[in-house]
Image (cartoon, rainbow, N blue to C red):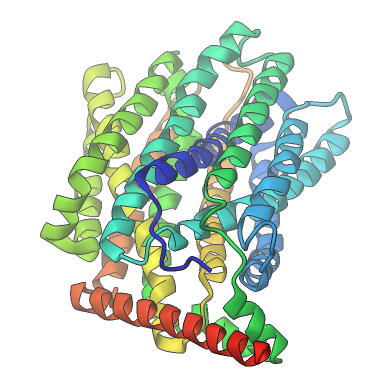
Length: 473
């Protein structure tokens, strides 16, 4: 049992490679799936938006179940988290490719195909994503160091975002353009292969830390069971988690709408300048690595709570700038877009770290270790935000008369794209600020939680050793 072992920097970076795969897949779907459904499959935007919402109803049931399954897992060979990443990644890769096969079917057949493949993708992503996000909690019990670990995890992961938002555009051009079915399929295959390899390599890098827990096994053998209702208190009675999820969820809604509209915004509002989308990916990736060096200073100065509030306030300013500047003023438009993604990198990293802290907060309050269950709520909110974003985009685009076959859209459509990309995020960022005002974890609480977790782990180990000694006498 190695709960007290701290991950080395090498292990942190190697494990973070899995986040390249994770971010690449999620960003690819978030950025292109609506465009793919409307422009390649020819599915109405409202139908596409409904597909995402139906998938979330399924997730509402499956995500917490998956979290509880992982929390109960204790494999002698694979540990707690690794088996789901290692065996789920190939399945996720296959289903991801199937999503972009664009079969020659009737409209009804295409809609059924889209529903089925997207829901299966969502389920497979759940199996990989929840343990992937929960596992960092065993890399360190130190809250401060965990923030830096999360910064590294996100910075390395943003290489995947860069690949999805920048490299994918050029790859589509190489293989036939964004109107070619074959191009989409080929790019999806390449992304799936590399993502699967990175997921598995990431899991293997922490095999010395994600290990069999004899203390957990002894509790199971003694007949100790935690009732479902009591286990659910890890999320239902967790004020810290609730505030983070509201803040992160509204934040992600803004980001997902922004990402989902990028193809439309750069193609129509800015006049066929989709090649500039790559700059957003580069800006995010570069700043994320800078963030590793400055995150300690930033959090020490403001704390996570006020660090998020300040960043959200700046995001409001950037969105207002994008709303005011004419779309043909390329330099200023790109300035505010890049500012938005850089600020988003800060809030994303701090929110993810705060979710891990909320898992410790729940254990501190309830005595139940439910890190994977907590992560399942984070995963669900992430996907829910993506779904709501697509749902809103789909219905608004249909309402204003978006026509995929037109080289230039109507002024009403162009305005709708701009307003969705600015006014909705502004409202979302305000909600994030309000939620974080009620976030209960301050620096004093962090220290108390850290001491509690360390003491609890030591007592668990001592209890196990005593039990083993009794059995051998």
